[in-house]
Length: 300
Ligand code: HMG
Ligand code: MG
Image (cartoon, rainbow, N blue to C red; front, side):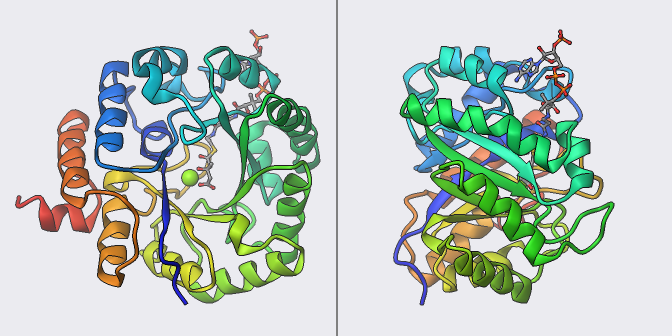
């Protein structure tokens, strides 16, 4: 059956804004985060500690954390960290939750991390060890779990192998990424079954669906029925990865909340406040939010 409560893992400030054509001013980002927190979201991923030349959109990570102060700290304010340099930067800012991000495919490992899958696991190992030693919460993302723009379909065994290697480092949570949004419900079940067989139960798994083919919500509900209770979503449906062709926005937080409300599943977020936040953000970005629920409720 469905869980009684779902943890919404909000990725709008990170996944949402990393793919914008323009760099959003840091004060606007801080206001976005404040509005998301005021709307009752539990976990908000804030930014990435990656080189500015790789993701100029998030080149202001330190400034953003300075602006957020207390509200930007704690184990429910993760940031992306690829390597030890990123970890040093994050720890210096008092961060206590990080996410490493691997790839199920060699093509995307090269495009996104400039190294092979094996080399990226080597890069992550000391990051995870040092983070855990410092009492930091660690999530492991795995991208291209359902398909890859260069390689096409990705075998479930290959996905499980990478997930296991990252979880064996001691990470607290796994997030299975459908980076390009091609997955369907049966595929979600096959992957969750295979992960469980490999010793990674649904209590350790979050789902990260991009909505390219309109399957993100269906896939999410399928995962919930199978025991998952952590769901990644992006307010307004912003998002995408600059290093993956054909990646579009994440599951919109509002679409998720609408569905959870209908099912009577607790989540803690205020739908109207999220819609207002998306409407405000759309004005900042100069284009409407992709979310269907936002369009329906914004009264435009
Ligand atoms: P590299 O070029 O191989 O790195 O990139 P390097 O170690 O050779 O360093 C190159 C330069 O960058 C050096 O400076 C380093 O000091 C510096 P130089 O000597 O040239 O002056 N440097 C750094 N500076 C600041 N912060 C750092 C840092 N690291 C090195 N952390 C690297 C390798 C992993 C760094 C690069 O490939 C990278 O940053 N990749 C990340 C790309 C990215 O952020 N992608 C989007 C996030 S993933 C995603 O969206 C998917 C997800 O949503 C799930 C899904 O949907 O599937 C999570
Ligand atoms: Mg993503």
